[in-house]
Length: 411
Ligand SMILES: Cc1cc2nc3c(=O)[nH]c(=O)nc-3n(C[C@H](O)[C@H](O)[C@H](O)COP(=O)(O)OP(=O)(O)OC[C@H]3O[C@@H](n4cnc5c(N)ncnc54)[C@H](O)[C@@H]3O)c2cc1C
Image 1 (spheres, helix red, strand yellow):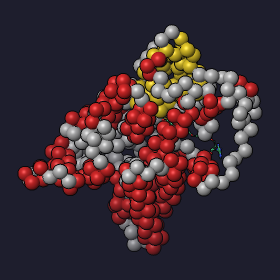
Image 2 (cartoon, helix red, strand yellow):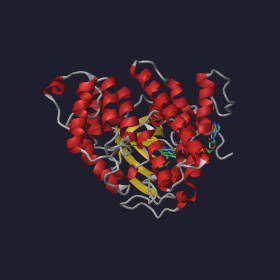
Image 3 (tube, helix red, strand yellow):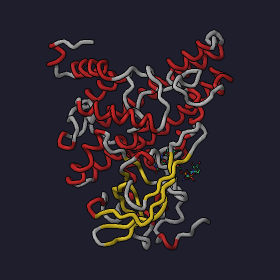
Image 4 (cartoon, protein in one colour):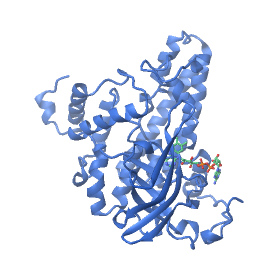
């Protein structure tokens, strides 16, 4: 596609979309044109491409210009998404960096922190991870036990984190650690920016059912963090964590539209056709339900994004998006198994040709359950919606107001 002189100078979102489409056609492969195994190879490909997109002025569209963004609005962001839907642009690699770490640094960072970290983050030079969950603190993340001790010029961090997505590829992370053990659990936490390549950081990738290693178990042994990398006020790490979890839930819940992924209606329909099953009444009904589900979640996403762009705070309502996305994913997994039957399990792992059925569907099915838990489980989201959106009574909390050292552990 060539671009006309008229579109070149058109400053509307439509003009932006035309320029984005022309650039994508000249520079990026079509989605699905080349299959890559996941992991390192995919990260390397997406890193190189993200830098190219950033340099061309199509990344960090709504971010402030002084920190590497384009300073544009929601119409341009949506225009880019429409244009990019057909191309193999980075999607998973930057979900934590761009969906959670960038926004929290933007919200809480000092001018120095923003200037130092954000341009590299948006360009994808540095990958960031979220270091909240611990072996004994997942849903109850305020009960975490990784400690940060004050030393000359900064802090020393010791403890362990688990489930940390993509940490094996990351240069930096956002970590919450306990800085005061003598106050109630929510009041003794502080958030820091940490160098994942620093001495004392040991990252251990964990293998899951699909053979991939999406998460890590990480040990921090006396790792030095300079004072200038403290992100939250001392003892205000819980508020910072809640703010970041809200970004996470909005990002997960209103993330890329489903029509791009392996569970997209078009992909499942193509697989059903390949198997010759589209004349079966049960399969047709399941396909129709899948279509309705896809449209519903995508409209909810659009609405929430529009609200956020209009400056309407989503606050705890981000949990609605997260819950709706997870529930849709659970139902989609059931529908996909009805539509594809036993063909769904005839899979021999990731290959350059895909998984034989339709690229990604079986792997997606195997990993489906993780979306019910990632970013906070469905039960936890229901609790948040009940208390903070509907105003229902709070769950009883036996450890509220008690100094952390006096809370019974493992009881
Ligand atoms: C795909 C994926 C990616 C992840 N990435 C990251 C990451 O990058 N960084 C990070 O820090 N963490 C990450 N996590 C961890 C995730 O946040 C936790 O797994 C999640 O918060 C649940 O914690 P848990 O696994 O310890 O389960 P638990 O908290 O032990 O929960 C066990 C069960 O108890 C239920 N439960 C617990 N508390 C309540 C309650 N108050 N009310 C009702 N039911 C309750 C839960 O719903 C669940 O069914 C990731 C997880 C997944 C699956």
